[in-house]
Amino acid sequence: MSCYVNARNHLPLDIQGFKPSCITLIEGSSSSVPDALFRLCVSSVISSGRDTMFVDGWNSFDPYALSRMAKSFGCEPGKVLSRIHVARAFTEYQMDALIHGLHDAIEQWHPAVLAVSYLPSLFSGKDGIRLLEPLLERLKLLTASSGIITAVTSFGGSWYGDRLLASRADRVIRIEQPSKKLIRVIDDGYVFEYMPVPPGQMRFADFADFNLPGGDVYGQDSAVLSHVA
Image 1 (cartoon, rainbow, N blue to C red):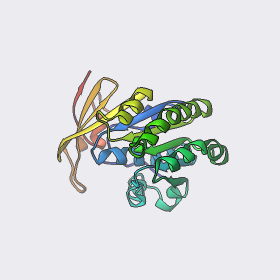
Image 2: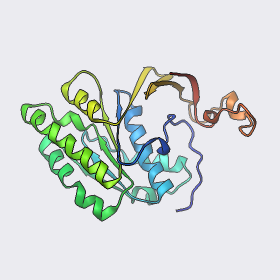
Image 3: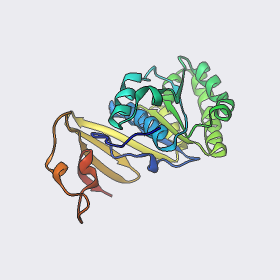
Image 4: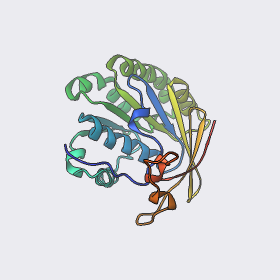
């Protein structure tokens, strides 16, 4: 697959930050949370040339959003989407069955990334609470044994399922959106404040020579307002 990378307006998260054999949780109520998962899938297909598996727990999979992202990378959307295998769950029992069947699917597709959207949201009842903890243990074991990158989203917050998932994840990224013009990413003790740039607009940083010392790598994509430990 031949393409070039020219992706503007994305969060300061990239495929290199997601480690194999580890579960990364992306949480928050911002619309940027599912977008981060979609971008991970697209960039993984492009950079690795391998398939991606997407288990949808909140009917959130958006092929149009993925198509736009593929175009932003300079790739043909159909070729990228054909490498992303989607399964949907509408109940906790369906999600349980899908996760238990992932081993065979991984052997068949050999994906680089497993994405699971809003996993805890289906496990709200008594049966859900009973099923969730062993299911997360199975997911963690499968992730470690297969060497796959697993990324899971949740709404975050104080509910049992969200807290349990956060405690089982190897890395937790929280995305907050205090206003329409500001997105805050909290990742491993660092805070990135990100200002999206509307399509067709440019910033002063876009004119910088990034080969010169002090050039801002984020100038290609966004305005990072702070980077605080």
